[in-house]
Image 1: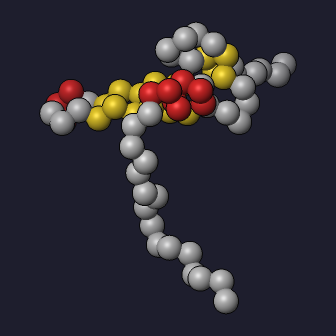
Image 2: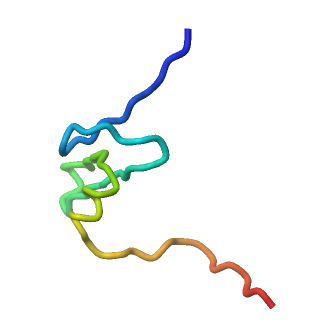
Length: 64
């Protein structure tokens, strides 16, 4: 028997389509409180805004 996992937004309760959506990670300054995560749709993530964070790791080699 096949099973299908359906993601639902923690904010609105709407279904998140396959290949879409985002995870919002909340990290407290007091590490004892731990970390919280929310699954949200793309639109909800854009509305919340926030700042853009640079990706980590090496820069790709420049194309010549």
